[in-house]
Figure 1: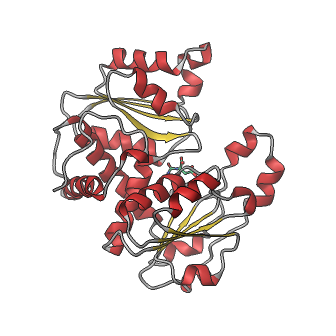
Figure 2: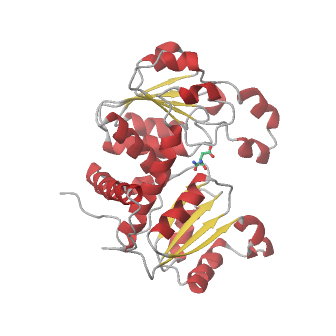
Length: 319
Ligand code: NCD
């Protein structure tokens, strides 16, 4: 029997997901949230609770869906975008002190954070008196995105097992694919993962090694017809420009950014019930012409974010 393993805890890494039961629990709660949203039902179990949402990196979907999720559940919400620009971090304040401050000033019951450092959520959780939710940390983790991605896959494929998943693009700097791949490795049986990246942007070797213990993993630098025609999921990602900028490697970015472009013609070769996914934002890697194909699921994928984040907030705060 699945139980709520999220109550009272921070959710900072996909490594906290130990078995499928934890995910099934959360997806049931997400299904409940979906029904309530679709019926426009007023459901406010978090009335009186305080949720703080702090973003130190740009975001459209993750930020708005966390804020919308917390508000729909009735919480008091304090949300700050542009922390890196407008908070006391510009005066030299540490992340630890900021977390302590936000807890005090907002009487937060949970703090959601996105930050460019890999260990930011961990550091925050060490000083925070209340649970931390990682909304994206550095190049390493995006554990709520992985849950919403899997929720979307489960919804359309009706299973978590026996899937052929193709992950394409920047597998070195992108955090969404790392979290989703690790999640699949824990919950999915008999799944085959094909990792498609230019050699310079291949997934870190230690990650691939760990994935291979649980999944069949194939690596290639070609997005060929053979790769996509048997896929159940083709998960595209953008080349992460900001990390090239920070490293002064914009020439390399320009050279790599258009390596893989998914066209309508390519999608037409996929199975009828296959899905094209993308955490978004897309830059040029999925042509607009793909949007009209029924296999394009990247817009619906975003709505899953609202349901899954509502489920997570409720599961962490209410027993
Ligand atoms: C992703 C991220 O921030 O890692 N976006 C998102 O949360 N949906 C993907 C990206 O920025 O490429």
